[in-house]
Image (tube, rainbow, N blue to C red):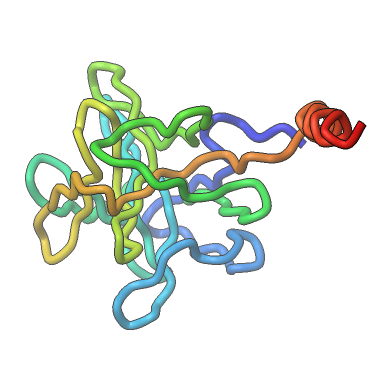
Length: 174
C-alpha cells in the first residue's frame, strides 16, 4: 500500500478521546518513566509543527523559544515499524537516499520533519533548523549533534536491486 508523504493520521483535539495503541501502533518513543510518547503534528493558524503527545495529556511542541501545550487540533501519526524507521542524521540534514515523512511546515512554507533526539524525545527537524528541536520542562532545546534521528519511510530491498546484486555475485563465480 502506498504511504502518503505525511503518513496516515487521526485528526483530534484536546477534547477527543485518545486512540488505543492497537490503532496508533506501538509508541515510537518513551519518556524517562517509560510512559508512551507518540509522534504527532499540531495545527497553528498559519503553520503545522511536529510535536509529541501522550495519552491523556495535551500535545506539546517547541515553538518560539518555549514548550507550548495545545488543546487545539493535532494529528497523531499511525506509527508502523514495518514501513517507517528512524534514520541517523546531523544538523537537520536529509540522509542520502531517504524519503522523509513530513511533519508540517513553517509559516513561510519551509518543510518540517519529525525528529527524535538521542534519548528518544520527539521534536522537529529541518535543514534550516540545523538540528533537532525538542521541548521539555517548558523550554525548547536544540540538539545539533549526530545524536538525532529523522522519521523516514523504511528502505525496502526492491526486486530490481536484489536481482542486480544476485547477478553481480553470480558473475564472480563464473
